[in-house]
Length: 157
Image (tube, rainbow, N blue to C red; front, top):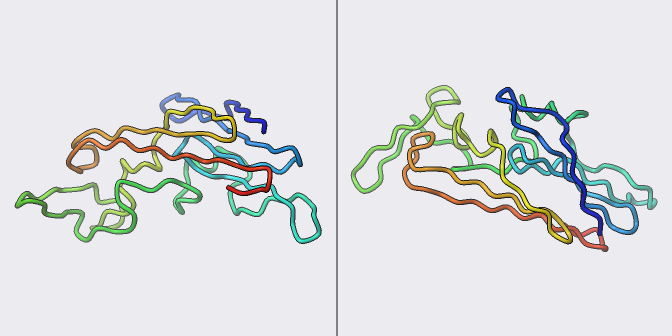
């Protein structure tokens, strides 16, 4: 298994957006980026054994910086919509970022899809980590998230 990475572009804030490639001995590979811990390509054999990318996505990694469809991304703190961008827990109302009309969708503007994640290479993949502090996007509590992608010689993710 071969794991490589390279800087493809930068965020508006100047943070490097990295493409990670995990390739097996047959040449099949999967690719990810630290921008939202996204899965961006899966180049695997088709029905005729020809290697082809079977995931929909953007031609260039910079397309993901402006993605409004959440393509391949790790969603959070909440997947789906929260009505009126608020909820009550233990008698306390939490006001969230309204990024979908009056609602919050997929964590709001501070969602995990809008973050550069820390990373580490594994022998057969990549592990992404993100810390979301108390109050970020209006959500209570500190949250530490790990997303791990591993690829096999059998083209299993």
